[in-house]
Length: 528
Image (cartoon, rainbow, N blue to C red; front, side, top):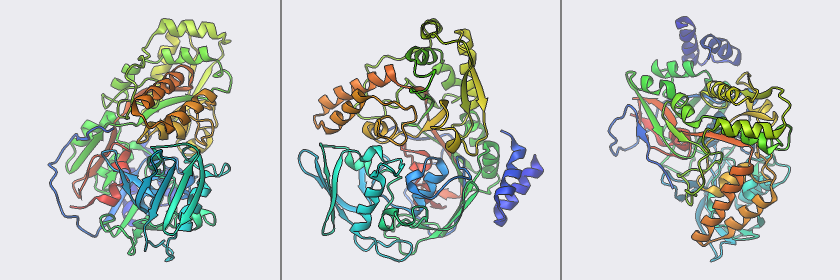
């Protein structure tokens, strides 16, 4: 193992890091907002960012089929790449507030049906052309097209028109939406030349870094954009992002100092890794969750009693303890937890109940044939072990759950949304509407349970337009209860985001919105 690791790290250092070499090397290794904490913490002092240096990222969660088209970004590697080369209209701060990005200001009329965004002037694309209001409008038209397959499609429903007025872009909605700024902050919605219609996967944007080379699922190289408009971000001269899907190899690369920061630290090794010299492990709780998803329009999962049988047969607390090693909390079969504004505390917790599981299974009339769950570690760290625990408890209830492990590479293209029952991971979103609109409304391109429910859709639209917070909370309560009872997602646990970096990195700040400071770690940190 040591010899193989040395070869892998030498390849990283030398730049001779090809797909064939990477796959050969790693094969040897087998296998509002919460406050972030540091397992191996260092005192945080206000520091002036230093400029320069080459940052090396070790990223788990990338595939050889990845693309630079932000509309299709659906894993960690694609997400991190979009953060580096692109900008969205707005952003979300670590404390859950909206910040202006490409939009210099934003405002709405009293009923939140008309939103005006003043577009920043003097911003240049990486090809040297100046970004225009027309580019902004084209971006949103591309992502809102029914045939776009954009991950942001569901969030853009209800927009009746987008027009220019001088340097302003004006969105007119079919009904009020106080959360529109959050929806427009999504990482899929990067502003591109002509909205990306001409070259969606070119990686040309307005971001702090330009794409130098792209070898999907293996390695990306970025260089500093000298014309970047925001001087508070992008302190490194260049960034290398190396996809290391094997967790052991990723941790080893960090410990050896061959990469400066990594994502997806397994909860099982977080404490041990944090005791390594010159390594700091960071964990932040928030909205991220691990889940198993069933297509509710596909047999046998179109049977509500079978779905309920599986839900009652999962031991959530055991998974938090054994899979998350305590770095997380119990889930309740909806994608929302107390980290979200207007969370419904009255929703009953679905407990582990083998008797109820057996009753619902019998009532379902299932023929006893194997119920196949497909998993890969690409879905989430510990997915295979979590599935094995579930299989054991299902057997106790007489439910014939079987587990099929498949390769990590290609999982998001060949399994997720293709197979009727599989493991999945969601990072969560800043507000409930964005999470529901992205993954559960009928029109969403990423509705990975095929939960097509007219009542649910209508409640989402109604809650979106309700500006009275008390009434809005009541609507979200109805939404939660409906999904809890009828949905196809089994959400056993909300996981802490666990990242790690070497002591060469300064400027880290916790952000519960996603891993690696919501993807901004390469943009906001600097060499110590």
